[in-house]
Image 1 (cartoon, rainbow, N blue to C red):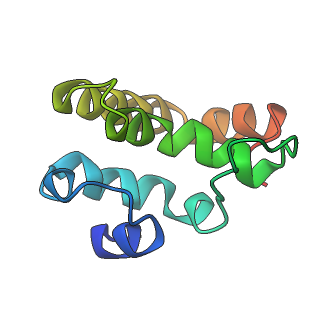
Image 2 (tube, rainbow, N blue to C red; image 1 turned 135 degrees about the horizontal axis):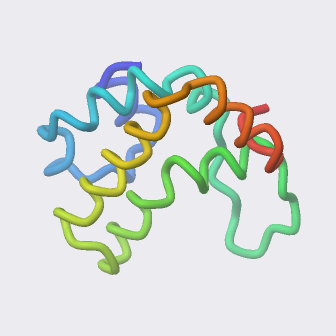
Length: 103
């Protein structure tokens, strides 16, 4: 998934993050599972794989949008997700599946 695809799918991604190289790497790494990810509503009791995937992968960006993570912190969080994934992609996806995410 390209940065353009990410921002079309998730318009809440701030414009200033679209210029960060990590967002491109993030899109390539997680594009397949992000295509099915869905942001849960505030009062949902549905803990579907799509919701858990969204919360795991897009959570740092949402936290940044609420003003609780600085730009540097959200970039670091995205880099950490990518690094863990790149270390062992199968284990990362397996862990997400075990937690009910990445359906």
